Amino acid sequence: MAPDPWSWPAAWGELGVVFFVAIGYAVALRRFPASRARIAAFGLGLALALGVLATPVDTIALHYLLSAHLLQNVALAEWVPALLVLGLPPALVAIIGRNPAARLATHPLVALPAWLVTYAVWHVPALYDAALRHHSLLHLEHACYVLSGLLLWWPVLHDSPHELPAGRRAAYVFAAFILASPIGFFLSFLPEPVYAFYEEAPRIWGLSPLADQQIAGALMSVSEAIVFFAVFALFLTRFFAEEGA
Image (cartoon, rainbow, N blue to C red; front, side):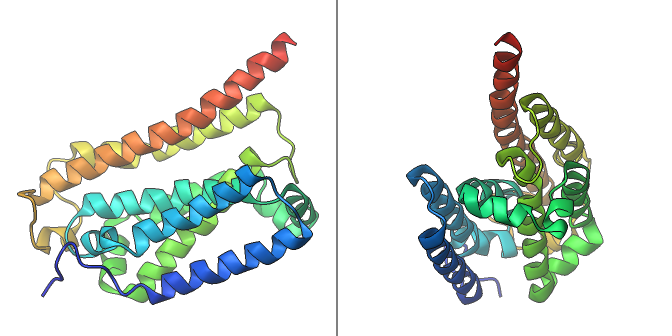
């Protein structure tokens, strides 16, 4: 029997991970100071992670609605990593950037494909349904989203180890949006549901599985557009300012 949609999940594992990440960040700040804005960004990233994993959003996502689950995925793959990367102290980023493995992993030609493949593979219906039925696989899915998202945003939001000019950063973000957007687009217009788990899930709020899927695709597309185009516009503006200087 499915839990009440508004019940809070027993997210002790997620709470533990966020707690230890917060402690690690606080310890790092003692050696590598960061501005208040960066600290706020990191804290907001952790809060957002808890907001989608340790609240009724998670209950609805895992038992009722694909739209809630896709919103959760977008948050973990895009919003949370962007805030965490933005919150890192520049001095710490510079040290990490000296590591050959980190330098390779954060290279735009590695980071972007890694994120795109992760994003696409976990939305394959068979794997998507399997993750919803096996929580260990679901935790792996969420970890993959966050880790690949960190790689995605690193060359955009930090100069180390790859100092990209503003124009290339704008192009990189635009490419990420264009290459990731078909998932949400197709979900919005497919004539029938593709995820068996949500076809079998209890219905709430009068939403059929197909209507839920259409809303999910629209939410994914709109939320991605807002984030990516905001960052794209920022770096495009910087590019034109540099060209006009």
